[in-house]
Length: 420
Length: 166
Image (cartoon, rainbow over all chains, first blue to last red; front, side, top):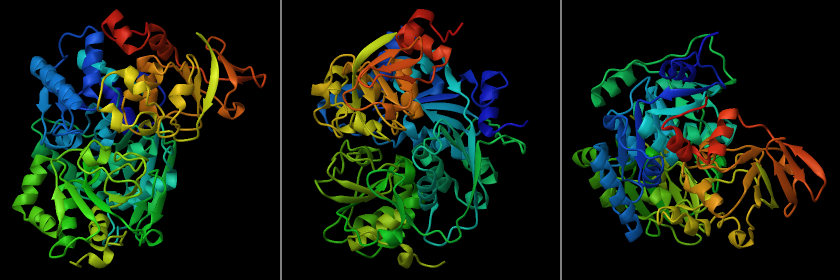
């Protein structure tokens, strides 16, 4: 019997013939922590009597969740991270560098075939370039930093075959929301998701990141894709290490195979307060919104900002609406500036904030008021997620958010898309 | 391991933002302080009602969402003895075992709010004393029991310096 991508990578990294449901101890290629989780990991590192990182070049810490610090308490946590990073000589990315997941990819820390853990649930993003990358907690992170290893239960795999071609104005965000709505928030719990098919292959690497990023929202451990020429070109541009992509065997065993055709897909919206509460935009259009947000590890990349700018360019946002934009990294912000995208967004009325996670996780930079509706490109709409448990969060694509801030209500972006 | 206490019941898909909101988790590393806000968005009086050793009882997919370890730590520091649910989200599951919070999968439909429960890990049974039924629990793999009995992964590493499941 052949193997899935997950079984192959965990076999290679553990040195045993790993099959679904086995428990293995595997060697890690990279380990990442952010400012919401790293200080607890540093505490655990000390509790474990840790002395040195197993390999400082394979560890990174990123300050992105509250960046720059909005509070005295947070500043103390940040200071502790900076001290640890300096002391250990690990990779360190301070405020303004960007969202941890974007940096792990941009800086070439995650590559095809590698095994990566991150103390952040959206670490699964790197599955889009064929890395077995998964979120862990702070104690796992500390154990990884000390030993270079972690225990894994080898996941079963659920395969999503996406056929057809996404229509104009419908994006990878709409596709992944649709899939999550279909399988629900625990449809892939404990499992690996593999995403394949012509609609996936047609996506840019950035578009694929959006899909793998949200694998956790269906409960999955990883959101894997096979590497193709686009993957190799993207990774070669960002990483200066060699890599070996891993393919699933034709006779691999899957827990389930689900096929879809997306040729007629509408833009999708996740309604409050769960990510699987998904509806086509025609059912939600017209809902008033007071704030729009474009950013995050899901949809804060250059092509996302480019689409948004093309929609709002030369227009003004609705007077009762606020529009917040957080590019996912400093590099993206610079690229967007050079391309004139930032200017278009700002002239339309956007408040552009420091690259980071703030608005998405409710730490600062855009906490909504009681009773307000927000349309956001983030990956979670849980009650209180953006810092106020009396507000309502709708999730959609960057195009949907851009169209909605112009009208002040949830708006189908398709009439705003200029045909090529 | 034996535990005895009252059931505090919640529904399906209790996410880590509800267990401990991002509003608090970034502010402090004082887990006793965080514990005061545990489950606050679902039940503002929860912390005040809990007695040491009580159980959180929930439906499916408990702990979904973020990887914050503050979630199991806040529950532990609110003196909850164990969490019983139909299923758990996986990062929360790891984090709980790693921090020494027992999680048990069982049919929680057999438990009402306020029921007196007794957990016998060895026998793999929850006794619902109020309703006089025994509820079987899904056994934990031996290496997870090992981490739990060591008091969590930090203690395990302090003891062995690395993973040791021999």
